[in-house]
Amino acid sequence: MQSARTESMEDAKEMADLEKYRALGGWVEKPDDLQPALEGDVSADVVIVGAGFAGLSAALELAKRGAKVIVLEREFAGFGASGRNAGYLAGALGLEYDLFLKDIGNEKAKQIVRYYEDAVTFVEGKLKEHGIDCDYNQSGLIRAGIHPSQEEKVREGMRIGAELGLQSDFLDEAQMRARGIPTAFLFGNYVPRGGTLNPGKYVMGLRRAALRAGVKIYENTPLLSYTEGAVIQVKTPRGSASAPVLMLATNAYTPQLGLLADKVVPLRISAIETEPLSEAQLAALGWPRREGIVTAHWTMESHRLTAHNTLVLTTKRIHYPYGSKTPNVPDYDQYRELRVALHDRFPTLKGIALRACWSGYISFANDALPVVGTTGANQNVYYAAGCSGHGVAAQSMVGHMIAERIRGTEPPLLAALSHETPATLSEPFRWCVVNGALAGANVLDDLVNRKVRDAAGPA
Ligand SMILES: Cc1cc2nc3c(=O)[nH]c(=O)nc-3n(C[C@H](O)[C@H](O)[C@H](O)COP(=O)(O)OP(=O)(O)OC[C@H]3O[C@@H](n4cnc5c(N)ncnc54)[C@H](O)[C@@H]3O)c2cc1C
Image (tube, helix red, strand yellow):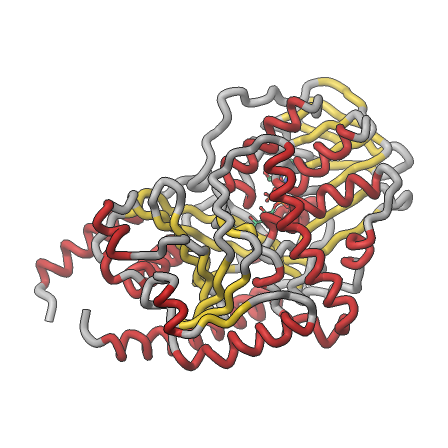
C-alpha cells in the first residue's frame, strides 16, 4: 500500500506534468516572419480560408497553375490540427468501415481506400518536390492489440481492408517481438505504407513553399463573413477580399462559419509528449524501426517515437464541446488519461517527465468519411471537412484535388468522395448522443485496460 507521502509526491509530480500545457500544440511556434494581416481591399482568382494542410496544398497547386491566390488565416499557418496532430502519415488503416460500408457499398468503399492510400504517396512526393525535411520515417504503421480479446477486431478490420484493396499483414506475438515492438503490444495489423513525421515541420514547409510560389498569406486575419455571388466578397476585421472562388479549408472550425453544422462536429483530442528518452531508456524499449502504433481500442491510443527521441501519445479520450465550439483550452482529464496509458504501455518509463501537453480539434461526420463539395448559388464555395482525425495525408491531397477541380480538371478520386453525409442531431441531443457514445467507448476500453493491468499484477 502506498504511503500518504508517496501519494502526495505522485500528485505533485502529476500536477507539474500537467502544467506543461502548450496552447499552440507541441510542434510549432508562431513564425518569425508572421505575415501581415489583411488591410484594405484586395482581389484574387481564389480566396482560401485556413492555412493547414488542406488550404496550403490547394494554394500551392493553384499558384502552380497560374492563379492569383490569397490565403486568410485566423492565427498563423499550422495553428489548427495540422500543427497539433500525432504525425502519422497514414492511409486507409484508420478507416472505420462499420460506420460507412453498408451505406456506400463496396465499390465506392474501394475508391475511398484507394484515395487514402494514394494520399500517402502524394505527400511523400510533395515532401521531395518542395524539399521539406520533416523527419519522415517511412516505417509503416501498426494497429496493435494489447489484449487477446482485441484480436478478432484487428483481424476483422484487416479482412475488410483486404477485400477493399488495402494490403497489410498480421503480425503475431512472435513477429512483434522479433521486430522489437514494445511488449505491451501483443499482435497487430501492419501496413507497410506511410510512417511518422513531424507535422509542425511539414506544415511550415508547406507555408514556406506557398510563400515562395507567390501565394499571399494574410495571418492574424479571421474571416468574419462572406457574401455569395458570381464574385464572392469576404470580410475580415480590417479589410475585404473578392474572388470568383472561395475555398473554406477550415475543417473543424467550419460550422462556426455557418456551413456544415448539420454534417460535421468538432471533437477535441489531446496529446502528451515526454522529455527525450535517455540512451538506456531507448535501449530498454527496443522498437528499432519506430513504427507508429495505434491500438485497437474503440477510441484508439496512438504511440510513437519522434526524431528527437521523445514519445508522443494521443487520443484515448475524445470530447465534443457543446454547440460545436472549439475553445483553445487545456483538457487536463485527457492528459491525465494519456499519462495513465503511458505508464501502462511503457512500464520501463515509469516516472518520465512530460515535456508538453496540448489539445486540438478534428472534424467528424457520422459516417467518418470526408465531407467535400461546393455550395452557394453559383456553386463556387468549396469546402473540405470531416477528416475524422486522419487528415495528414488525406487533407493534403484533398486540397490539391480541389485546386485541380477549380482549374477545370476533375480528379476521379475527388468525385469518388461525393456521397450523402448523414445529418447530425441538433443540440442538446447532439451533445448527449455524441458524448454518450464516447463514454460508452471509454467503458469498453477501460474493461480491456483493466484486464491487462490485472494480468500484469501490481506495479
Ligand atoms: C491531437 C491530434 C492528433 C491527430 N493525429 C493525426 C495523425 O497522426 N494522422 C492524421 O492523419 N491526422 C491526425 N489528426 C488530424 C489532422 O491533424 C487533421 O485532419 C488535419 O490537420 C486537418 O487539416 P486541415 O488543413 O483540414 O485543418 P486545420 O489544420 O485545422 O486548419 C484549419 C485552419 O483554419 C483556420 N481558421 C479557422 N477558422 C478561421 C477563420 N474564420 N478565418 C481564418 N482562418 C480560420 C485555423 O486557424 C486553422 O489553421 C490529428 C488531429 C489532432 C487534433
